Length: 338
Image 1 (spheres, helix red, strand yellow):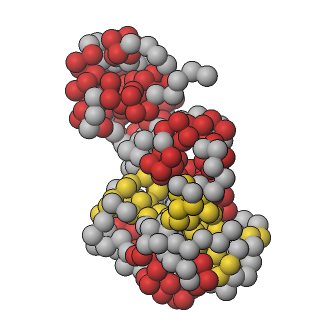
Image 2 (cartoon, rainbow, N blue to C red):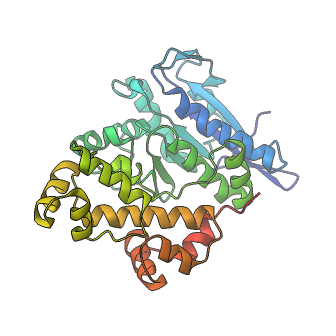
């Protein structure tokens, strides 16, 4: 079904809105950057009971097949020029992959011409590098796969790079971290379009379980911090994670590691890249967030089991780190039991 699109790439038919989604393909693209968002938008249309909620198409420069960097062959629906002949898309998705390292000049020219006209411009993973090279991220906040954040910041100084979040939304521009973060971003866009219930239905179907908030770190605490080389400190990191409500003072942790407090603090920071206090703060915040997202426990119980002691102490930590109170965080991200 072909749709005559307006400036937002959406057509109305019998009171229903159809949103066009165009996914850019090129040699060396990451297949999951393509299929992840594609499945979210397709699943959202089914969950909403409106198969025409999204018109999803893929396109390459010449309309010919492309090879992903893993070797999978993808056959586009059309050429990029034909895809926008009837108007700009509602949502333009630019995936990443090895092919972003030396992009075809014609692809960059197409992006410079047509991407600014899309209702929403979205990049997944290192697709942000294509947008940056085309000058489309200048003056905007953006993120990308953690391994490419330094490259993005160094080579494109006009871009305000945020290396930690799984996705960043800046007006009509949205960028996400690596691979599965593109699913999280797509779910956020579906929630904006069709509502929270549809987004959660899709998340459950894909066994993603929960649409993660954009300001969630690309890594859990255990992955973002370095793993200590020495076994006592490495074991202690795991113990902290398993006992967020325990006595995690420097003195208590040092005694557990059989080191003096001063020696322990220096050794912990040297081997993990963060102070014991900062590591404990992150563990407790992550634990509390998961309880608010996944359980119906009261705020007072969550604050106690997460090591905050009082709801007010937890509220201060949430506001400082996330810009929102625990109750509002739960309202936005709690998944009801099914």
